[in-house]
Length: 136
Image (tube, rainbow, N blue to C red; front, side, top):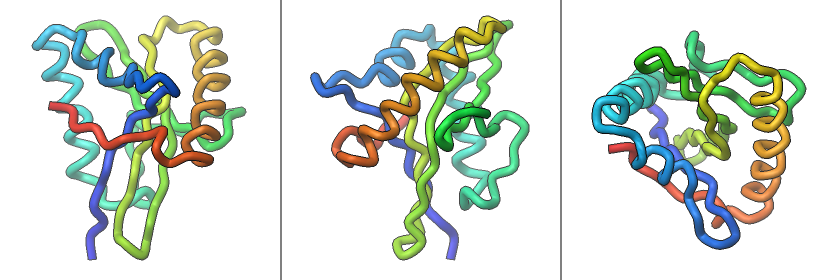
């Protein structure tokens, strides 16, 4: 059986979804390109173990975080998250906990790792800190 993908986003304790806010702030052309890249991953890989894509890589010195590269119009957006599989329900989840625009500095990754690791712990301790989100 093929696994079903879910994409979830981190929700702050105040209920803020900054991934949604970031995505919705993009102009329609960029938003369409980001959507196409996410949709490609979503529809072409049916499990985490089968995910071998040049735009997705594990972040070194993190607690199992991954970076999803989304190049668009001379900018490179990065979504930072972690994967979780529920084999009994055939569900694979990408839980996005942070985003940034690549500026080719180690400082961006350092902050992404710090914030990402912290938010991952929050989500694992309290599943309501991530909700399903549809990039449309």
